[in-house]
Image (cartoon, rainbow, N blue to C red):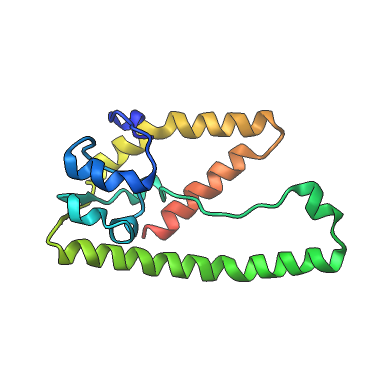
Length: 162
């Protein structure tokens, strides 16, 4: 995504990002705002650009091998399904609280928070469209509903950015 937005991406583990930002090896990080507190990166940045129009930058999930899941007795499958459904909202709430704490942290440090203008949002969304179309195409080739998934995702981004 960074490349499509005109940046030169540098892959590195989170535990190296603080020092890289501090020493100027990298100029920015593309991360959830909670990272700025949790990994203390807010200490070594000057500002935050809110990019909600692009969607969230991180997906967190746990998966089980489909064959293993299907080999489980139905009552055990049901437990996995029910617990998974229950914890979707719990995990989301915890992550939202962590993001609010991250935002508060950088504000308390005196960092500047910038939003994108409607024109910038449009430009950024257009810049990453090839990534989304590529994903959609790959899913469709696998017989998966890529178009539908992208439509749902775009709807959720619009809904939760109001």
